[in-house]
Length: 279
Length: 279
Image (tube, rainbow over all chains, first blue to last red; front, side, top):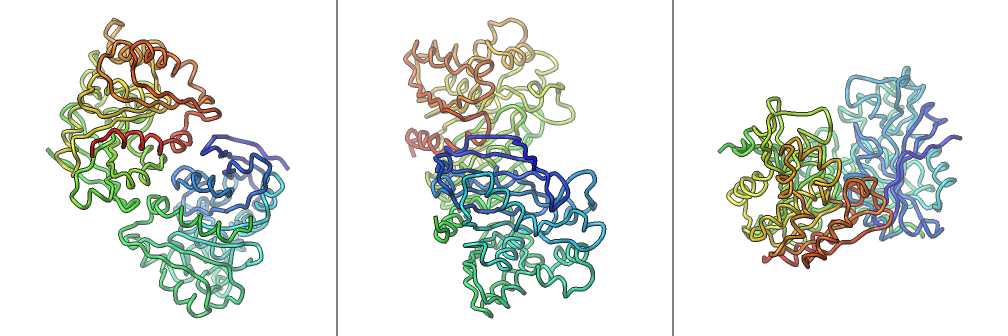
């Protein structure tokens, strides 16, 4: 396995680092970023929060804009940010910003031309944590979070793998992708027209049937232009009530879909995760 | 005077807003950003920190990457970030990243073709504060700070206008531009070959002769690739010692020239300014 360090920056007495590696799952070169808190420099194994970004993003958006490192440094949590899709010249793409490169939707695609590379679900659940846990001083205590498309990914992945995650959170997630334009377009392309196959990637449907629970927190801005048509937080609330899922959903007057919203509440998310992570 | 609102984002219970306006000083349309803390929404006049960015930046880099809003919201300080030069199709430019658009160096250019638009010194000292103080609920208490080229600008502007600023700070400033490649290139282009004219834009030369003082803080990363050739913090320290200037200079092991460094210490800078601003 080849892995290459791309950049290193000291940050809040910890380290932000970018790496590229050849992904077996995705059949292409992938980049990810990791923030290692100061505790990790002393050989202590720290828990890891995986952050899944939204449409058009890379590993950089969250690391540069969320202001998470200050709190992660204080709490002794590592943060890993993968890219949002496979990338590269040989990787299928689409002209829309909401399909193809930058829009992997954290699924395992079954349809051509996507099925050759687009297996972000397996990458995030299996290959990336194996790599992180073999390379860095981290424990097997994991949390997962994300924004928008990444909030969808985080909720789906935590609910399908409750034994692997101590906690899950999301900002402005695409809660019910089988029932919104972004989700229908992506799931039809990646999984085909049989909508029964879409259910395993829908947070609302998974939450409604759940019997094993991962403590969950979701924050949604009320001035988010995508809320009504694409995000549907009310559907997630209804699903949680149906199954008794331990979901804390907070709605915030005036906040939009941007990283200014994420930065305003990332501290609460990290403290939520820290309370669950058995350090 | 026409001024147009471009964007609004709620941030830490305050507001981040971008505006464009026709600048009389610069003879072009300029964009700036302002963060208004929650106190400003209650009609209270708040002090203003002006932030001057470095080479290639716009108003967005600091607002998106520094994580300053959390502390500015707590302390009740507005932050204003102008662009780093005049911009537009009719504005002179250069192929280098370190001259022309994105590289105004906060001077009043006297040489063609630059002298038609490049008057960032007057813009930052006069036009922009007049506009801000007429439009927003802010007091006439001002602080100024910046990074790299913007650190140079902040130090020069505060030292030449001690009656207008309560405090000044800088991250990784170009301390002695008459004596480094970036500075020599820019000052020769904007001011001409007579190096005597450059002195009024050199923080070290101004600090060495200063008789009126503005409390000053500077932070420099020791792993900054530009430190030795371009930034020369030791020259600033020597100048402060010569005149007894109240300069606090901190050097930080392992930190580089990036916004990861700025984000790590912006809280200390804002608290430094808050202690001087008479609210």
